[in-house]
Image (cartoon, helix red, strand yellow):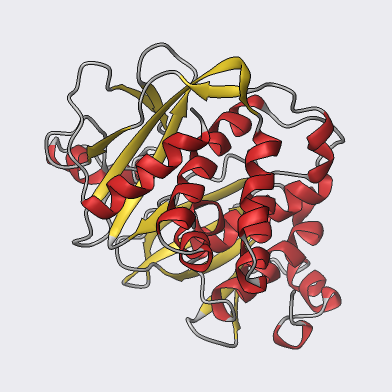
Length: 328
């Protein structure tokens, strides 16, 4: 929730908009953030210091841009709104982003993503669960149940984090894990950014490949969600799970419309994302002389059909084995 005591009043912000001179207004708190009004370029926005290795993903909004830049000798992240008709309506959104950075301690990139996601949930029309989301959740929930059964409800739910902070999907026993689920007969998986297959520090990164197909005797997404809820006797774990599920886009009203039942098409496989793994990253592009910060949007597919899987650590293997049972 936005803290009004930290921000300009709507009237104060409107007076800035009437000025013909560029303005930077410092928002109290840490890290330092500046609200800027740039009348010459018809933009408003936020600037703040970039975190180490922070590479903002595109906002996917036509009038909302986020980029890395150098400003006053610092590596900064800048969020900019480029439609003057929307400035007054956009101002509370920028305040909310600032509070998520300074109060909730998110990066600017994650704060913008979460704010726009929540606004999207507020405005979303009545409708069914998009199938691409259904497929993604099938794999992640199977692995989540696998982690709960291998360890504990609290540990399993705590490990599931991708929808909350735009990080890798799971943190399992010292490994980062991306879960990719496909209905294809081959192991084609969509990668949605240059950073999705970048390891965090020295932590090993694994990609878990899940192939599913429709089956009359299979499991629906609503049934998987019900199984997780049945396993969560701890209240804190249940609250965290429901928050993550909501962030992912699930609504309980979908239960009546998700009638497809699914099962595994093939065993779940694991691949360590190391030097020989097929991927695009900022470092690989930089090695070719290409500046990744000048590329706004990257989506590509990897085909792992003919790539031998890697033997996962025993802790991860136990999670995968338990997860397979949920979709078998």
